[in-house]
Amino acid sequence: MAMSEVWDISEPEPAITHAELLLLHNAVLDTTAQTVVELGVETGNSTLALLMGLRYTGGYLVSYDIDPCDRAFERVDGARLGTRWLFRQRHSLSDRWDRPIDVLWIDSSHEFHETRQELRFYEPHVRTGGIIAMHDIESVPDVERAIGAYFDGGYRIERHRLRGLRANGLALIYKGEA
Ligand SMILES: C[S@@+](CC[C@H](N)C(=O)[O-])C[C@H]1O[C@@H](n2cnc3c(N)ncnc32)[C@H](O)[C@@H]1O
Image 1 (cartoon, protein in one colour):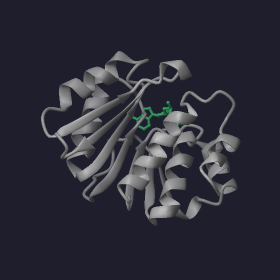
Image 2 (cartoon, helix red, strand yellow):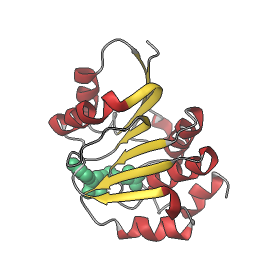
Image 3 (cartoon, protein in one colour):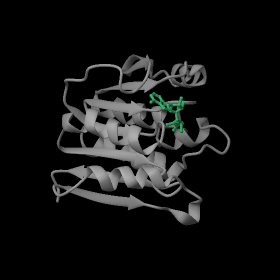
């Protein structure tokens, strides 16, 4: 299956654009990711893009969502990517996490305090050379506020606003690249 197939199987008018899904897919490849953590699944657009990257790197995806995300399950099964996916239906901050993370993808509550808590909880486990990706930096000011409140030196932040494509904006934050 090629990346172009994310286009074919994505929902009509998803809240995340194809260009943003490609950025996520490439983050998995760039880091040769073995472990990816996703906060916020819903219908599974980003889930599929991450899993498609993980097919090439041989890694796996752990996703959190408070909802059952049935549609995402159908789509992941349809794409035969379920063996690389561990879905946890619970709040993003409810488990203990103690393993290294290559890519952390945050697209959950978008609320300032909760987003900052998610960063405090997971980001210390992102390895040097890993990537933190965050959605809706353009459409939800709280997300940009949380980025400003959490990150200082030691990170390179790339903001992909993609306005012409009516995207909600995605930040790629490279750990260890000031
Ligand atoms: C914008 S949607 C995710 C979209 C998905 N990433 C995609 O690309 O299709 C946000 C999801 O985050 C979930 N969510 C919100 N706050 C959460 C939290 N604290 N823990 C787990 N899931 C949460 C919601 O249930 C919702 O399904």
